[in-house]
Structures are given as structure tokens and as C-alpha cells.
Length: 169
Image (cartoon, rainbow, N blue to C red):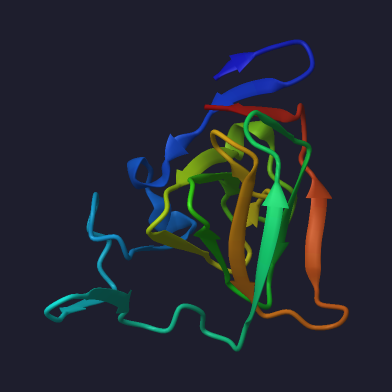
């Protein structure tokens, strides 16, 4: 991490390189890379299948699809949800977003961790975990998300304290 005049620069790291359990549950549906548990595997003569061994979310949920710009990006605000978990599901390419531990106040730059989730993985954010919007890593991105959504849902977006965070790969 290096300081600049107007913001703090942080490099994104693969989510398997941090203690992701502080922020949520990681499912590896690709069977490549780190085994994260919580999955079932089956196969037939011309197919293979991996599914979650537990429900993805602990509430009814809607699925959404978001398009966003690629890295680098500037984080000036983050959101959290008290009423739902939220799944981040890459769509054909890695996605990057920032996380910070639950707290009553918005996180400061020092608390923010930029992570990359690769295709074949799904990351489910715990309730109250602060997170930024997700972005493509090498190209403008698109991703699916799942969360309980309803009219006037209590989602909190807040400005981070201190300097903004500039996320790069």
C-alpha cells in the first residue's frame, strides 16, 4: 500500500490468499484451485457437476446482473446489508471488489481489502460486511449477484473515512 496526495493505492489479491472467512463463504464450483468445501461433485459418462452442499443464501433472494468498468477504480463509498447475505458470481471473467469487516461506522482506507473472485467461484458476503461495487479485472465486467431485495430495503451506502482507495491489479 502506498500513499499518494489524493488517495491510497491498494493492489487487488485473489480471495483465496486472504482469510476470506471473516467476510463470507467461498464456494469453488470449478474444482480447480483451492478446495473451499461446501460443495458436492457428481459425474456421468459425458458430464460433470458441482453444486453447493448448503443453500447459497439463508433467505429467499433475487438474482441481478450488473455491468461495470474494469480496474483500476476508486472507492469513495461502500455498502452493507443487515437483512441479507449477498452472493457475487463472476460471469466469464474475474471480478474485483473491496471488503471490510462489519462495523457501525463506514470503514477507513486501512480497513479495506480489494479481492479478486475468479470464474467458477462464488463468494457470499456475510451480513453487515462492507463492500464496494464489483468491477472487471482485465476488461469492463459483468457479474451476477443474489440477495434478498424488496421495496425500501435497508441497504446502507456510506462514504469511507479518510482518503479514497484506488484499486489496481
